[in-house]
Each structure stands twice: as C-alpha cells, then as structure tokens.
Image (cartoon, rainbow over the protein chains, first blue to last red):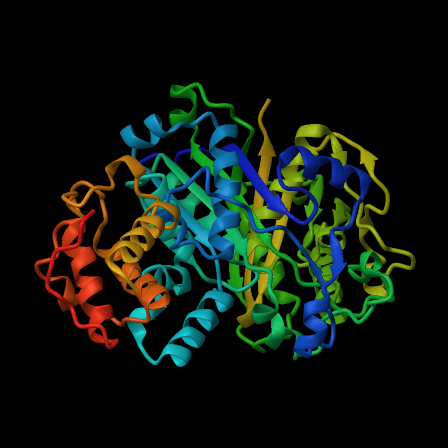
Length: 408
Length: 94
C-alpha cells in the first residue's frame, strides 16, 4: 500500500506564555518569559522555586460533574488545548460522532492526583471514601481516557510515556498510524502537571536553575552562564490527518509532517549523549528524504542544563555540517514543559512558520563554547521558513525528532 | 438531625454537587432513571453522605434503594441508629 501523506489541520495550546494560539504567538514574537517564583515550593523544601505557571481552568460550563471529577490538572489543561485544536481544525462533535478519530497523548506523571488520593485513604482508612474520580485522575493514561470519553472518540486510544519526549513521540506515533493507513485522523499532544508534588524529586537532582533573583532570566539555553532548567507545564494538542481525508472534508491544511526519527542512547539514565540525538535527527531526515540543507530552523530540545545543551549543540553541528539552520530553544521563554514539550514546541514552531518569524532564544548574553557552531536566533527575526525540525529528548535516553514542512 | 433537615440536605447536594435537575427532585423519583445517577455517582454519594452525616455506607446498603424516598429513609434510619434517637420506621415525607 502506498504510504499516505500526513498533515496538521489544527492546533491548541495552554501554556505559561499564553492560554491560546493568539496569546502564545504574541509572546513568542515579543520574546516574553512565562517563568515565575512559586512561594509554595519554598516551604515545601525545594532548592529552586522557579516554574512556568498556568491557572487551573474552570470547566464547569463545559463539562458535566461526571466528566470533571475524573479530570486531574494535566487532563484539564489537555481538554482546553484540545477544544481549541478541534475548533482550529473545524472539527465539531458531529464529525467526531460519525468518523473514527483517535487520540495519542504524551503524559508521564499524575503525581498530585496520586498523592492526594492516597492521603485521603490514609486519613479515612477506607478506600470507598476516596471517591469515584480518583482512579481516573491517577492513572498515567488519564489524558487519553478522559479526552476519548468527553469527545466520544472511537479510534486509537493510548498514552505515550517517554519522559520529556512524550509529546513528540505521541505525534510520531499518530503520524505513523496515519501514514500506514490505519487511521485517518488522530488527536495528538502532550500534557504536563504544574505543582510542588510533581517536581520535588526532579528538583532534588540539582538540575534546576538557582537564579531565583531574576526568574525570567533563569532559563538560558546555550548561554555560557546557564545553571539549569526551569520546570513548566500546560498542554498542547495537534490534529493530524491523512492529506486525502483533510482535503475531502475541506480542512484547513496548516503543514505536513514529513519525518519522525527516534533512537535510544543506551547509556546513562539521566546524562544525555551526542550520538543518540544525532541518530534521531538523521533518521528523521532520511524518512523525509530531505537533504539537511533544506531544514531552515531547528527548535532545539535545549533545556538550559550545562551538559544537555552542549551535547545537543554538538549533535546539531554534526548532523547539519556546513549548513547552519537557525537554531533556538523556546524553553528560554517557556521553561521545560517536560511531557508536553515535544507537542508544544511543534506548535511554537508552527506559529513561527505561519507568521513568518523566528522567535528568539532569549537570555543568550555569551553563547556557550559548544554552541559556537550554531546559528542561534538571539533576537526575533522576520523570516519565512519552509521546513523545521523539532528535537525532544528524555530520561532513559529516549530521543525524538520531527520534521514539518510548509504547505502552500 | 430531623427528617426535614435530612431531606433538605440531600436535595441540596444532589442539585449543587451532583448537578441533578432541581425539577426532577421528588420523593418518587428513581435515582438511576430519573435523576440519572450511575454506578460511579453512587461511589460519590457514599463520600458525600460520610462528609455530611458522618455515616459510612457500603454498596450493599443501596440494595432496594430505588427512589429518592428510599434514599431519604436509608439516611434517616442510619443517622438515627448512630444517635440516641430511635428510628420510627416511618417513610420520610418529601
């Protein structure tokens, strides 16, 4: 069977730099940081209290009690992002009811829901009193089980847990299913909870930035003075479809996914290397049948950690050689959106492609020596790009690279 | 707690927390068919009853509880049993 083309027809975002596509586009263009100091984390024993923040959406007008009691923080964010993405794709409930639409979402924790329900059982010494929603909030597949129920989806339905590459692999999985002719339309994305219960153990590794004096300057990927990442979260949803199905229903075709490369480092559980990410990028280029020179922009995974950024810089330099695509890490503004990042960063890059600009990698004052080979975007550039590559890497050495192309 | 107070409290949380249509509240209303409470809602009813009346129900307590009147009676009898007020066995008026 002939492989099918896969296109993006809708996007939705709920992020610390904006609660919808329009707000996020403005923040990206302005180089606006969404990082704050969270007082609650101080009392909780955090080393670093910096984080991206979003408000918990009030969904009372949208969803029934039965639907709301099963939604934890990350699933609530995912619902809001998905609602916007479906609207953006011009998909209504009638379409979902009469077509097989799937959902694959990246998520790798539900710490708050788990802890709160276990605390309740400890207090009451009676499991019945934890309530009916606890189990559906606490399972890692909470996002997909809720979205599939709320939107009455009848296609593929599972969650991808792949650390900080979860969202990217979720898109990659959806892409593969559509490409192979197994699905026509899949809702893909990534979600990340934001609370002191979720990030304590990560903070304990000592990899968060300690620049609490100036929160908006703390996340500084590729800068020589970077001292760690800043956690963040929210949710990002993309609607992806076969080109034929999108044309048939008159969908807005925003771009085409042309490559998904993946690899595993096979080494340290937390320290990234150069070869694994390089392999993922090369595989994505091979799948896209694309020469490296055709990539205009790389949205780097770069989280602002000393080793991670340096190794990614080496990987990008080795893959692209003398061709120097523009490179930036939007995490300089958003912080590290972890399980969500692989999906949100495709949306950030899409907004740049649609609006013909490149968002800055803010806070670069003195580029790190390892990034000297890169064509870093330090200020907003008015630039039309046709092809971008988005990198996402995670603990355990999981790597994902997606390539997306403009459709005119 | 007297009968009227129990009825009032139950009606209040059914409307406010369980989002039952106020117009459907009637003693003869069937919990599942009229008020549209499902098996998961019954789990949450147990939680709400414990919070509001300090009574711990289990699933078996709902056997034979079909109407809202049955439910009022169940709670009245259980709250009466846990206090010094003896249950009189009368059905609660709605």
